[in-house]
Image (cartoon, rainbow, N blue to C red):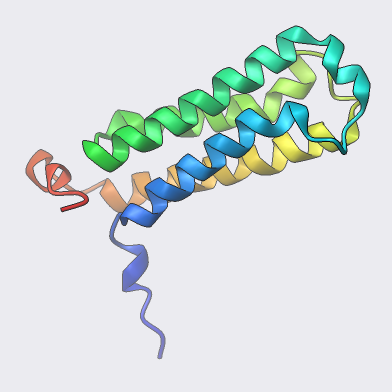
Length: 131
């Protein structure tokens, strides 16, 4: 019988994974695979960089001082990353749309996992995270 107990505790590797996702989001407008027309959409580039920096920063905060608002913010930012191609008008670029949808879904799933793991923890237990 398998034991899924390792999914019940918020681990520091999850925070490192969030930092990696943030870095990948920041770099995504400059991937060489995509349509060169995205270079003209400064709003999309600025939005992508801002989202990546927020995901990276929140993951660093979770690593240092865990709070529930960080996980909720991560979920909301991931949902915005999924909606961004349609809201900002770069959904015609297939690679970037699929990439942002996929990475946004990973950010949302990571945030949901972390929120689920920390749901019953009190403030004292959350402060012990990473120690």
